[in-house]
Length: 411
Ligand code: DLL
Image 1 (cartoon, rainbow, N blue to C red):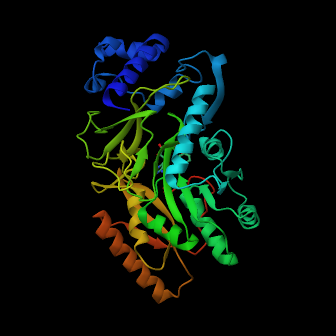
Image 2 (cartoon, rainbow, N blue to C red):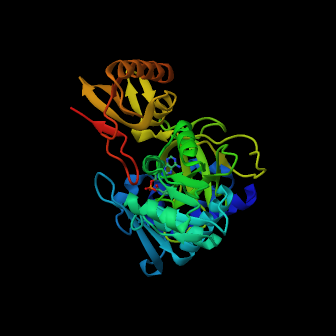
Image 3 (spheres, rainbow, N blue to C red):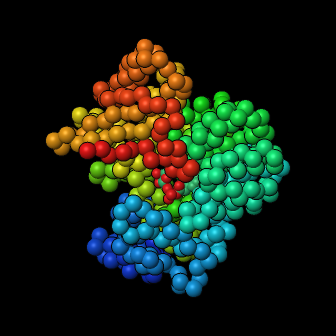
């Protein structure tokens, strides 16, 4: 899509939202803009954002741009606080989503002769059904395993000859532990992992332990689900589904667009969505748009792997810390597993962080003390701030079957 086509698509989206969704009409009125004010891509910054709270405030159907009867499916995310968020898809939206995931699968290296085991949750979460429709559209053989029931996952992998596994990276690590424990020899060659932030270090661990290539896939239910962006075999950033989304990077504090290449919050506008199109949706995900062309030769927008969500950023004695950076540090220490948890406490209004991590093996006291010291040094070096560190018993931290909960608030 060239700049002119993109401008036309955005203009027609803005017109549609103004005509059909009261929230957008009011917001545009408040900002003193009308659809006629959108003439070039630069004008987009004058138009209002959408945030997650808008979905909650307009629960369940208030942001629809079509009649409810035109909806073919609803996905709902539970959310830890307040009302859930509801996303409606028309038949055409579902087809476009399947096409996007199909493209992503192909970009990731999935082939029609692959056996794809989908261990993302099926149901209200977009992961399972989203990947399913795309992998099926590609012509692969799909095993809709859904999340959890790890013993059964292994049995299916072994007996059915699974070549591609799709799940969260934290669950992939858990499966790798079980596969090692049982000494299984599998046919896996590729993993499609996403739905949570994960470091380069975790990627290498998963790749080495499972003997596969691990590909990062990104998405969020508000704008679609999985399939917004994906890596190719070069693993040099994620290719955005340019025909369906327009990306901006903004300063999360000021809301102003940042110059190309700078890291900030990803803002996505849906192009061509019918059920619940969104204008300038603030994802809270921190990334940057990569300059230049990927070694694979594909053009279009490429984003860096997601550093984390701005909501998950901790400020420890004035220093910004993302869980993914902690993971990077832990991943550089030999002898640590990447099963970890960040314990955060509040001392007189200041946050304190203690990183808990399991060693890869049981250790005697001296070896544990040495490993803890090395870990603390690596954390200090990478984060630039001293944080607490505690080794915990192997196997003692809870394993995730979906998105790992990395932060625990303690008194
Ligand atoms: O997690 C959709 C999805 C399913 C993506 C399967 C990829 C694979 P939500 O539950 O709405 O949707 O959560 C979206 O998860 O805003 C990010 O914070 C995070 N996230 C998703 N993919 C990645 C990724 C699905 N590859 C939220 N890297 C997003 C880092 C990710 N964070």
